[in-house]
Each structure stands twice: as structure tokens, then as C-alpha cells.
Length: 140
Image 1 (spheres, rainbow, N blue to C red):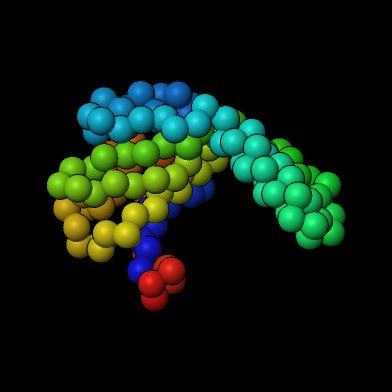
Image 2 (cartoon, rainbow, N blue to C red):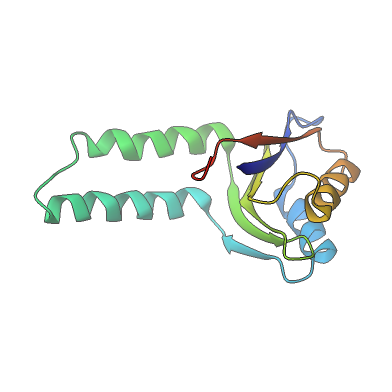
């Protein structure tokens, strides 16, 4: 199972993601921003995939649609940064922070103290509703 922590529906229409990141990095030492631009990182990954398929003689049917879907997400979410959070006791969460939501994933159970600590921290920022739930993962 993979567990996610999601903050959605910010009380304000958007939030200052730099404020959220500063707060997060101060509260959880060893955490880091892994990409300053989530969408450009995703575009680079998709371009690499498209090129690899072309080199293998199996081109992607509509590469413009793949890249266009990233553009659509960027228009919807606005600025986004990828993060890796060390929430204590070996609990590592990965995800993103956008101007309208936060999504973090971990393979630790929600009863894990790191997951609980992160949920309490996000609630303390008073950004919106915090949800912790299990989703099917690769080993499910």
C-alpha cells in the first residue's frame, strides 16, 4: 500500500508555496526541494520517454498530447515544486506543493508517527482540509 496525505481546498483561493516550503524545511530537517519546477521536470521525463520509444522503433502515437496534458495541469495548478520530506524515524514522504494543493506519498502506514506528525503539521498551517488515506500500490 501507498499512503497519501492531501491538503485540498485551501481556505484562501491560493497559498504562498514559498511560505509553506520554508515552514516545512524548518520543521523537518533534512527535507529538500527536489525540483523548483514540477511541470518542467515532468516535461523532461516525458520527452526522454518519447525519445527512448523513437530510438526503439516504437514511436508514441501523439507526443504533443502527452506534453499538452502537462501544460493543462500547469495552467490548473499554477506554480508547483517537488519535495522530499524526512518526517522522522525513517519516514520519507515525496510529493508536490502547488498554489492550490499539497500531495505527499509514503509507503508507511498512517499510524506511523512520521505520517501523523506531518498531518498535524499541515493542519497547523491552516491551509485547508488534511486527508490521510491508503491507495493501491505496486505491492498491493
